[in-house]
Image 1 (cartoon, one colour):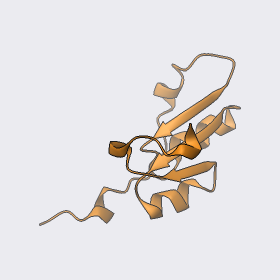
Image 2 (spheres, rainbow, N blue to C red):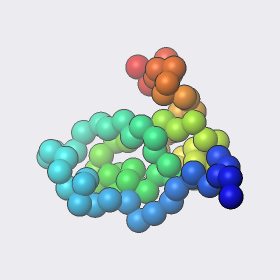
Image 3 (cartoon, helix red, strand yellow):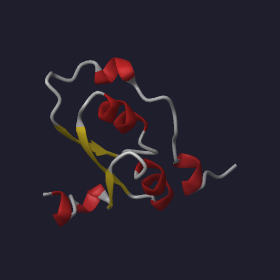
Image 4 (cartoon, one colour):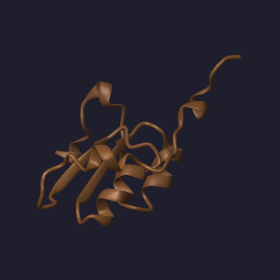
Length: 83
């Protein structure tokens, strides 16, 4: 069975254990390869300001419910709007 791009989209409950490693107080974070925004949702709930980058329009649409998401292929660098 051949994988399609849509099969690579991900949605989960986030990774609170990893996010617990971030320093306090909350600041600004760039979520590269943000998927559906699950980690960003948790970070926003904790007071972080989050921006995301994904190459997939559906992931951007999901993640945009929580924070600003830029559509870009990071192999080409960050979009100018992020810098």
